[in-house]
Length: 437
Image 1 (cartoon, rainbow, N blue to C red):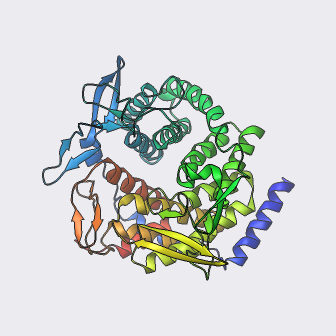
Image 2: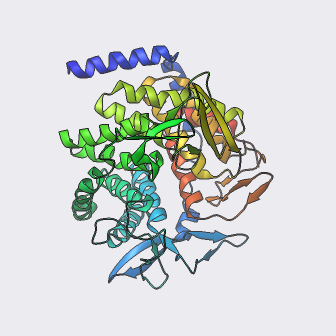
């Protein structure tokens, strides 16, 4: 208990350095009363539309269609890839697992079971996962984004299965035991990543861990989500050390500060930053909380405190690169578009986590301001998420809106809104910021 006490003393000091001030009880109670009268924005109708079942390796599984095209939102198959994938099934499973806590039902349990079975059937003999599946249930084992390698889809599968472990439902016990075996089989694989993190290389004046030249911190963050979840369920010294190693790798890729661009952003890969999948701050804040590591918390707060307001002031960013000369950093190749749901959700998660750890109301309001992108506070002043249908448009490209509504956009929006609705201060601010249709 003494260690924990010291950690929270350090955390309070970090908050002081970042000008944190706890939200008042009156403010939270007032916000709670406001949102209690409002219906939830969560509508799973379109996600239900994207859901289907099929037979994979002799097992009936659930799947999520990748693409759905306007104006009638018919389902589309890619001849080279397939019609569904671990990437989107995994993110859907994460949603349903978290949604079940808020809205438990037999239907949601059925979705959790079916989607989990899909992921389990896609694991290859080497422990990693294939990604794409064709409509006849054949697994695509050859496409470059489907081979069973240490890559995005394998890490998303890992993360989703760790989310499954946290769902409290007797009906899932057998499935959770099977999934736990898969999770534990992946820990040794993850342990082989970046075995020499001290080795660095220089790129555009930056010194970065050599092992991140192929796999960036964006993927490391997904791995860390799963490790954090697993540590909650089964803490161990080995797991703690692995989380610490992954977190420290991310620290090495943070650039800038309050005054210097890019204001504490975590580089995604090499000297590149991109908004999609930018979950490093959320992963570090969570790991810092679990391990009582103030350096992780401070780093996560730095991005939330300084970079996110910069992002908002630019009316959103999609990507940029960093170059360093002497002690000066320069942002180059700055891209504002496309803007997609997957750009927004990671930052909302980080801001809400910062609010949870510090009680600083600014972070909750910032999360709401970011999430308001879905409800009309965006470049085209148009609702990207439609609560009446549950559809989320696939993105904004300058003045053009891609009105297709595929799996990634749909689920990322639902994950965002679900998270915001669990924080009354943020939910009230989001409803206030929403623009009328």
